[in-house]
Length: 225
Image (tube, rainbow, N blue to C red; front, side):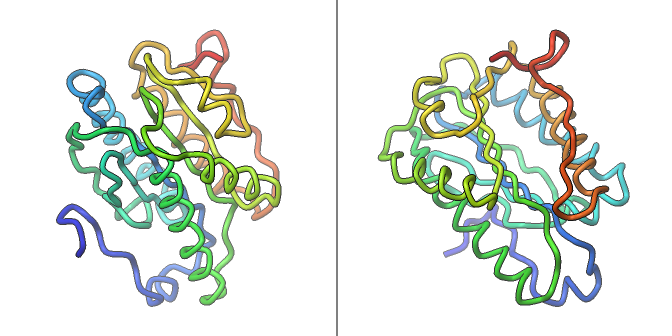
């Protein structure tokens, strides 16, 4: 049964109306009980900023596709939609932290979406998966880590992990090929401005081209390593 907040995926007809190459990004968001209060309020505000920033770039609005998976429990809040169609919903804190299952759900979504691109003859940039958590997994996560490493090795995606205060960086460093980043204070707004800017740069490039990103861990950045 479809979750009441879940947006329905596009059909192949979308590619007739918009044949631009796609830049898919899955936001993997921890909404467990420990995120209740100010952390979740700031995260929800960050998502609205993310939408506004991407929508202000006409090319990114057509090319960047957003999916949102929350945990726990694992819920596909938004299946892939272009940025101009994305509508953030206010997330509510609940449950524990089934991070492993959430990652695997995100990877399955990407695999299915890439197959749709191929079937429709639409080019696509390397997908991004962007994980934000303030804890550690309460389920089996090792298979998810293995899948990420395999897909990174074949350049099938780029996985980023961001830890809020309290995150299990020792585990995140085993899941992510890239060193996990620590969010300074609750600077979700700055994080999502950086993410939207980075995805906009990718969407303006040629598919397969290397694109330089601003360092989020620079002295004035939103992250620390």
